[in-house]
Image 1 (cartoon, one colour):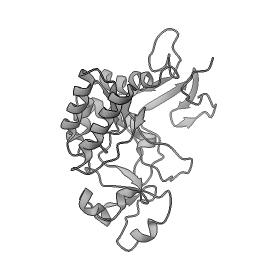
Image 2 (cartoon, rainbow, N blue to C red; image 1 turned 90 degrees about the vertical axis):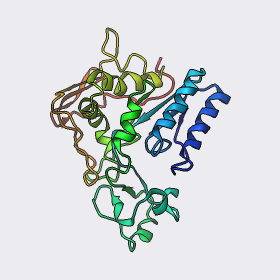
Image 3 (cartoon, rainbow, N blue to C red; image 1 turned 135 degrees about the horizontal axis):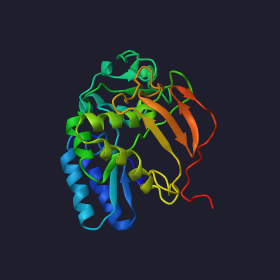
Length: 269
């Protein structure tokens, strides 16, 4: 079971982690907490991780993920922006940027834009300091990388840069932060596929008989290219992407071969 925790404030965020632990205990299901650093561990990551570690030690099955960005984005119509949001998150109107255009929100435009469904806004870099959140989380073997994002076809689409850039950004961060290339690669390949077994069995590893999903990249050049203003940008340093044995991307050129398949719980027979 994959969860978004429901509390974001410093005062309540650990309550959300405790609810996830309790759900794992009562249901017996595996619980995966999405983007722990933006909901659940933003202000008290070490305590959140300790709660999960203690639950795992007691026999519960719990994992979590983070995305390698120091800012979050969400829809302006969401409850996060109900009255009092400035005090809850220590933000101002001008701290909010419309994703895909780079336009800054103002006190005058906020009420009007909040009436537009699907309008995504991003907070400033550093809202969730990486050293106090993502770096701590990735040191635990139960934490992996998850984008919690998507990509829209429009050239300047209204989606968080993590939709296009999450995994290249994660690899760059893993190398630069000292986590190590092998460790970060495990967290973007094998560990995520293991969460969705049996649907993704034989994926996420390079081995005889495994599905040939491969990325060929330059470890010195790889990094995300997506930004808040231009979120649908190819990542840099990636030479080839092979999906199911078919080359789908080569040095900036897409091969629209439809080589991928929808992911369902049950694998095709």
